Image (cartoon, rainbow, N blue to C red; front, side, top):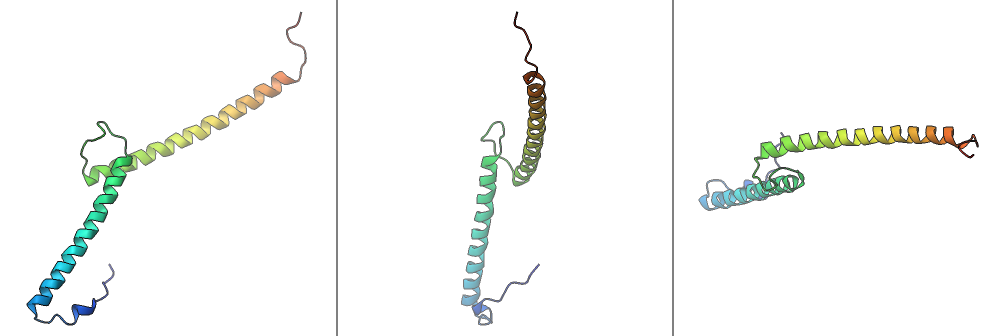
Length: 108
């Protein structure tokens, strides 16, 4: 972990209780802001996950695990779709070439 860069007033604090209080308030405020950002990101991720019931409260751990499972599901879905589309285009090509050239069929 990188060490944080000292703030301008880090060197001025010394034993002054007022400056220590200001620093603690600043640090607490910065941590509160960081935690709100993290919680906001989790809320946004939660909103994108399909669950039943949709408004069920989930822990951060559950949100991350569900997100991983949902991503795996979407990857498998895309893989299946690409396999299906390549199979259907092969079938369409072979049926078109076998039925298109003969000229004789069912007229009588």
